[in-house]
Length: 270
Length: 270
Image (cartoon, rainbow over all chains, first blue to last red; front, side, top):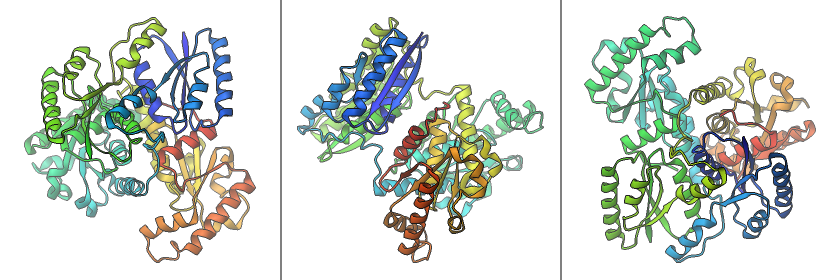
């Protein structure tokens, strides 16, 4: 059975969508169809949306579920007339926060993902920093890095660095561990001066083999033997040098990034 | 006055943090200090956290605010003994969802940001696609693009493409509009075959001048005159060719990306 879920926001709706998906992921046997309606901020839009919800209700024979974050209480009340199970994500909490803080809420939802000058520049700069120091290039910039990820090819370094840049505004570099680096019991020379900022990534050899095979099937690079060798040597290096490291095998980019931020005690720049 | 806010999760805590920040942004005069405790999943961790909350309470003389997403109800109850205003983000809704769906919640919070094989590959592929087709390179890949962003230098194309890749798994390319492109009343040749996938970005000339000045102060490139000229010609081109476009001047990356997804009717790949 499929349930239709409407995400309705007067802004991007990204927060509402992430709450909805987190909650509904706990009802696995049901499959959900998501309909997102960001930037909904007029009576007419809500009116049309209510008609859409009603027609989905008729079609599905079960009422849709609505998650909304609308700052305008009149629009929110209008939306509540739709034939749906309605979760109003903000009002639930705002009353209690108003009492606690002794202040009225400003009603400006969506401040989270609004542009503001300093965080705009911090983010753009962070993304540029990641690109300028990706995969071992741009070593002259390392002294400005918040963190330098170290690991074998295809362990997940680049997407993690980009996520750290976009989500946290952090300047994240990454350096690939290659065979020549295993011959010495030291960090590769370009990152040696920054040991306290180095964080290792590792992965199960079988998973690495799977990922590399997608890229270069039947190569020595993707072979199980090579993957086992590289991972063993990388982990040995991390242990010898007491570099903190994390296993990315069954982790998402969010999980890897959160772990790094936590372990290294990094502070958001945005 | 500063309030301390604890974000407590047995997973990344990114959803809880985004809800907390959205809500608290509506109480602007108060400044909030965020303490995040991801991957909290043992009694001992909760025990230590309660002590930390108590000591912050003593120091600040106002009780901290806690936003939690803990799947384990026993841990959640333990946490509730802390001297804080506690918002338990999931239980609030789970009961009602259980009744509506006629199913018990699985209790696996954090499914949203967990790795799963197909979305892992879709995301990595999307990020690689963005990097392989950034700033007008890799035109042989355009036929696989979900969207091609077009705009003058520094309008925000690259970070937006990366966000579309990481957040939505979309294959987003970008092509820079340069002076030579204004001489013809057509799309630049490499992207001409893909007109229906092209989306324009524009910006206020004064803002572009500010952004370019950060990069190359006192250059012709950053001059107000040049910025005005390029923006005027770019917008003219979008209008003539009926390319949908969006003004990034006071928009965040999230807002730009959400607008593109919405206008182009794009579907998440993850």
